Image (cartoon, rainbow, N blue to C red; front, top):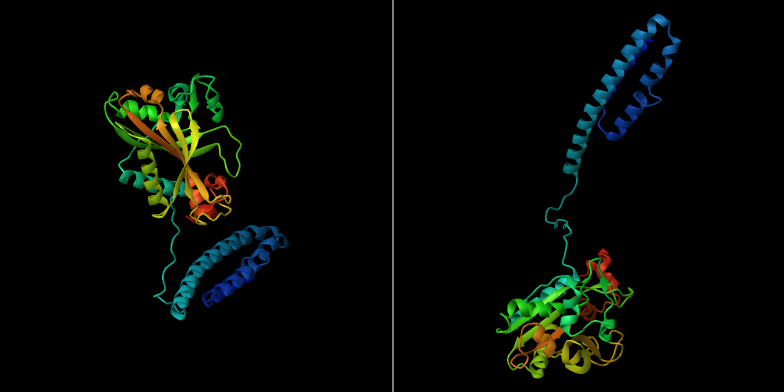
Length: 344
């Protein structure tokens, strides 16, 4: 049996030297080193030998197996290199074909809308002013002419924190007070700012409403600012954002921190005012709420309402994005679904 082992070893090495393909190499491995290979079967047959021969045979059989395994690995590397070289030589490669582009990330649709808003309002003389997400009840409500127990508080479903008097802001309007106090130089300087940020309301999540969403607040304070200034400013914005032929209309409304107040609509740019599913067949799309800053809010911001006046407006970037692209479900913005995000 010792002689058979040596013969098998020499023959296996000789066969291995002539192998030129991966398939033939695999067959050799199964034949020699596999579970039913020649070396494996010899190791299993040690029990048939005399006791005094078993140790020497087992030692030599294990050595042969290890030597053949090493030879197999070396031959496998060489065969792989030869096959690769053959493939490159025989294959037809068109080096003029464009390479495969690597996918890259993109801007979130809300971010894209925000950047366009920043550009437009920046060109119109407004600077970006950021305020905090966690606000005091006083800033979020009381200083905006919404005292405790005022029925207008029912317009906002508020998230309260475990710290008394601290809430997640329900709108970006408290930033008006902070902007007036920080930039107004104690009520002596005019200001024009936009206040972007996230808002939070304890509302049922549906296709049209979310518990968190972006807003973009606008505020202009100066001497002799009138409602006509607000209308002209918003109309100019609509033409820059929706197109030079955009038509705007104003509807009376109510907000505690502005007086008078109004809702702003733009003619549906999808149907041209004829009526479609996006505009609910009304021909108009609501884009903002606005009004003249209430004298109480001006006074709380440090301005004398007998000398100063101003206007404010609030826009929803997600809603504007939905209207512009015909998106039917606001939940897409926060679902992290690449099928949606990669469209922008």
